[in-house]
Amino acid sequence: GDAIGIDTSPLAIHYAKARGVRHLVQGSINAMPFPSATFDCVLALDVIEHVDDDLGILTQLHEVVKPGGHLIVTVPAFQMLWSEHDVINLHKRRYRASGLRRLIEEAGFAIERVTYCNTMLTLPVFVTRKAKNLLRAFKHYRNIEPDPLESDLTDYPRAINTALYWLLKGESRLMRHMNFPFGVSILAIARRPPLETSHALAADSPNWTALRGASYSTRPSAVSIRITGVGCTCAPPNASVP
Image (cartoon, rainbow, N blue to C red; front, side, top):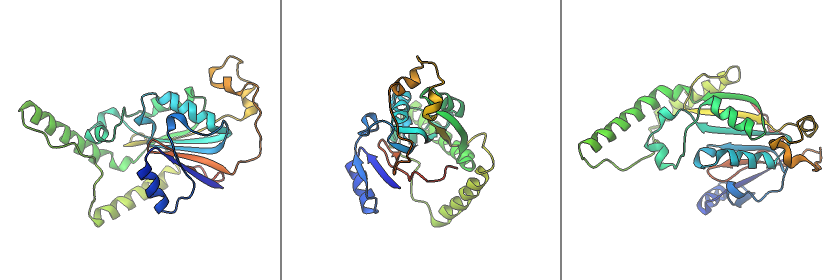
């Protein structure tokens, strides 16, 4: 199947094209240029924490996913991990698994799985960010000019990158068999209920108003969409869901 990418940034589109991504659209997740029930799978990877109305965005994603299709979402976890990394990346919030679950269900999806991830990084991230926050607060208290805000993203020595790679690879294997109770991020997998299921819902259900009088083909589509940054990208319709 085909994959479609969307991003608001012309620079991001340029880099994606340079890496061989063919189907790209410059646009915004706030006003996606796609008709209803277009995609088999939508991936919103570290996206909804950037917008004020996260429920509104999830409701829009529900609209473009086909009945029976999937939504895969990742978000940063735990407000206690808030740091200058979130500020510089224009995050509005961090999440708990229970809150993300409720939000996705309120948008009309049925949850299949919610788990924390990047669990192995939780302790070092917590210690590092708390130390930075305390240092910044101390400098503010002493009227010392603080260092410029900076992201956690930086170049690390190859040895550290290799160690992190194998650490997270091991975590991904464990994740096939279990959910994690904490982590730096949250992964959610949800499904838009099939059309026939929607008929059993109350006629005044706000999540299904858009389905009344609609006609959908049951033939699998050739395309699905993935959202990245504050735009979107797509995954093949037959891609396996973990």
